[in-house]
Length: 350
Length: 242
Ligand SMILES: Nc1ncnc2c1ncn2[C@@H]1O[C@H](COP(=O)(O)OP(=O)(O)OP(=O)(O)O)[C@@H](O)[C@H]1O
Ligand SMILES: [Mg+2]
Image (tube, rainbow over all chains, first blue to last red; front, side, top):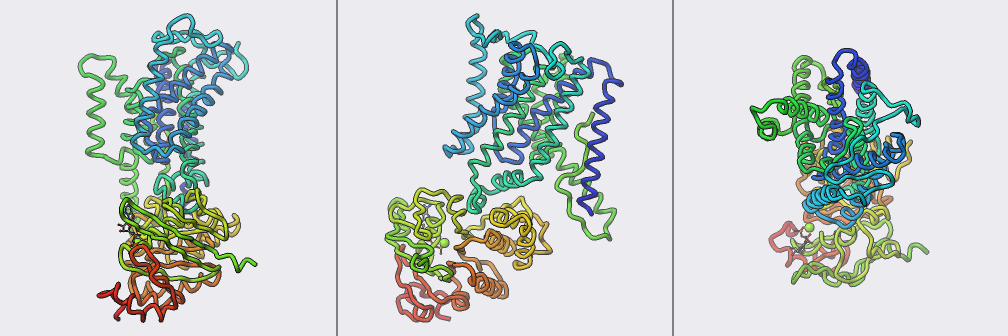
C-alpha cells in the first residue's frame, strides 16, 4: 500500500516535471531557455557521478575525462557526417569504452581507492594536454580539425534523427536536453531498483561480504563505472549542442571538482540531490559571472564549506529527513511507516 | 563413491605472516554433512584457517580441495559460488541495507525467482528478524547484526558453512537457539563452527578439532577432547573447567 502510494506520487511528480519542461519555452525568454539547457546538460553530468560515487562508492576525480571524450566524439562525428544522430551514439560509446578500459586496469589490477582517484585525475590531465596540443593542421580526424587550445568551432548541433536538413531550434534543443535528463534519471532509478543496482550498492557497502556471497566486486564496479562514463559522455554531447563548440576546457580539472561539489551539496547517495546541486550552483556561478564584485570561486568555496560544516549530508537528504520528521509528528498515533527508498519529489527545481 | 571424497580437505596447509606461523602444516578433512567444532586459544590460527578456505588470503603452502577440486588460485567470489559460505569473526554486513535486502542478495544466486521470496521469509522467521525486516542493519544492535550475518550465510544455501564465533555477544537464550539452528541445518549441510564457549561446544559437538599455535593439537570426540589434560592446559583459566 505505502510503496504503491510512493510510486504513484513519483509518477505524478514525473508528470509535473514533464509538463513543466514542455511549458518552459512558452513562458521564458530564449536566453533563459538556453541557460536552462546548459544547466540540464550539467545535471546529466552530475547524475553520472551521483551514480558511480553515491551508489557504487567509486569516487572519480576525473569524471570530465568522459564528459570531454563525449564532447569531442560528438564534435568529430558530427563534423564528419554532418548529422548528429551517429554523433550522439559515438558520444556515449567512446567514453563508455574508455571507462571500461580504465576500469578494467584499475579494478582488476586491485588498485586502491586513493590511487584510483589519482589515476582518474591524471588521465583527465593527460587528455586535457593532448587536446591542447592538437593545434597543427596535421591533427584531424577525417574532416574534423581538432584545433588544439582553440577547440572546434561551428560544430553541427542536433538535428531530427537521420535528417541533417532539419536542425533543431533552441526550444527543441531544450526539449531534447531536459528530456535526456529525465530519461537518464529514470533509467538510473530503474537500475537501482533492479537486481543489478542492489548488487552495486552491496559492493559499495561491503566488498568483502559481497564477494563472500559470490558477487565479483571487480566486475560490478567495472559495469557501474562504464555506465557512469556513458552518461558523462552523453552530457558532453548535450553540452556541445548547447554551444556548437568544443575546446579542451571540457577536460578541465576545475569542472571535475565542480561535479564533486554538486554531488556533495545536493546529497551523496541520492540522484535528485546532485541534479539540484548542479542547477543551483551553476545558477549561482552564472549570476555572479555577470558582475565583478565577488569572485565566483570564492562563493563556490564558501558554499561548499557551509554545506560540509552545516549540512554534511547535503540538501536533499536533510530536507527528506525534515519532511519525514514532520510527517511523523502529524500522524503520531498511526503505526510508524517505513520510509520509501527515495522521497517522491520533482526532478528539477525549474 | 562420493562418500570417499571429503567435502573439504587440506593438506600441509601453512600460512605465514612474516615470522608468525599462523597455520602450520594443517591436514584437515571434513565429510559431507559433518558437523565439526574447531577450538583453540586466542591466536591459535582458527580464523586464519577459515580465511584460507574462503580465498580471503592465499596460503603460503599446502593444498585445499573442495569435493576433490583444488581451490588454488580461486578468488573469494568463485569459492563462494562453489558452495562455501562463511560468517566471519569480525562482523561483515552491509550497514546501509535492510535485513530483507541482505537475505535477498544472498538467496538470489541459488533460489529460483519463485522460491526467492519464500526463502527470504523463511530466513527472516528463522533468525526472528521478521519484525526488523525493513530496518537498516547499521542501526541494529550487535546481537541482531550477528543474526543478520548468520541468516545471510544460510540464505545463500552453501554446501559448507563456516561459522567463526557465531555466539559471541549473544545472550544464553540466543546461544541456545543458535545451537538448535546449527543442529537443524546440519541435517542437510556440513558445518564447521569456531567457538570459545565450551557450554556451546557441548551442546552441538560430535567431533572437535583443537588448534594450538597454528597446529592441530588433537582431533577426537567432544568428551575425549574436553577431558584431555593438554586441552585443559592450554585453556587454563578458561571456561573449560566449568
Ligand atoms: N593479516 C595478518 N597479518 C599478520 N599476522 C596475522 C594476520 N592475521 C592473523 N595473524 C596472526 O596469526 C595468528 C593467528 O590469528 P587468528 O586470527 O587466526 O587466531 P584465532 O585462532 O582466530 O584467534 P581468536 O580466537 O582470538 O580469534 C595470530 O598470532 C595473529 O596475530
Ligand atoms: Mg579468530
